Amino acid sequence: MSKQAKLDDELMIAEAWMKSGKEVAIATVVSTWGSAPRPSGSHLVIDEDGNFEGSVSGGCVEGAVVAEAMDVLASGEPKMLEFGVADETAFEVGLSCGGNIRIYVERLG
Image (cartoon, rainbow, N blue to C red; front, side, top):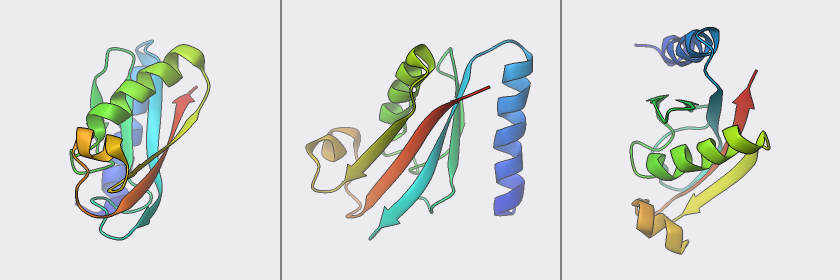
């Protein structure tokens, strides 16, 4: 599957969730450094029930991103998240790949 097809799938899922009346957030990898699990432009969509589709980290920080997305949905305020190997939180959530990723989380709609 091409990168564009994957992006289209995630955005189509977000659109379907929104049409069904759910609040939806999107997390986007905005920058990477070193050995990062997913490239810039990767997306994760999250609904108000904690369901998610896509990937921003190959599984190593997605739980933390989903939790932050729930806060974004509640507050409406976007967040910039950063995970890196030197960050204590990175080890807690499993980012031990040696890189650094920045993820922007915002509510859609």
